[in-house]
View 1 (cartoon, rainbow over the protein chains, first blue to last red):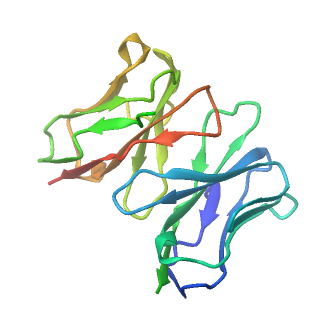
View 2: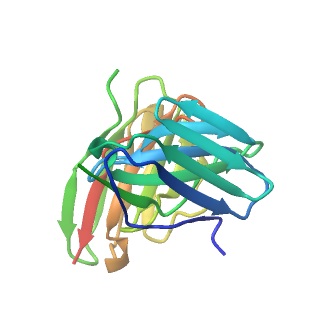
Length: 112
Length: 114
């Protein structure tokens, strides 16, 4: 079983839709949860990070962590064509803290 | 603030040849990471440096891959000899502190091994 599981998609939505992206994980020691956005032929860029459980909101983006279910989500409201990219979740433990474990990424296309 | 620089951007080689990738992290960032991203997969950590020392190289195929970070700044990743399965994007990232949640990635080097 992989440390982090993520549905690769592809996901295609109309402009203005609410997008839900999800990851599950098996390691209960993960404490930091990150979402990266990766445009084609570019390196990943950090969108949001959350420590432990709870919600975090930043503009149109909301990250949720449910540690009891080992499940994290990223919601994108009022999706725009510029949101078209691959979204990667990543996680790491707190104490050892060094290695990030990435999901496979979900490819999202927002259709104008 | 300049981002993480990588070169070359693309490289095509034949199997059994050698290849080297270069990375210049963001100024002042002590930690440097090399990742391998195979098409359709997430990045996999190959090696992590803290200044010029190796913190984690547990997933680096040491029979063919090597990396160094001289003077704690630039880094080079080498593959010798290359195999077909090494075809991937090699990403360099840096962070201000070890394990910092904010990693800044470079654009990557796309390697195709024929």
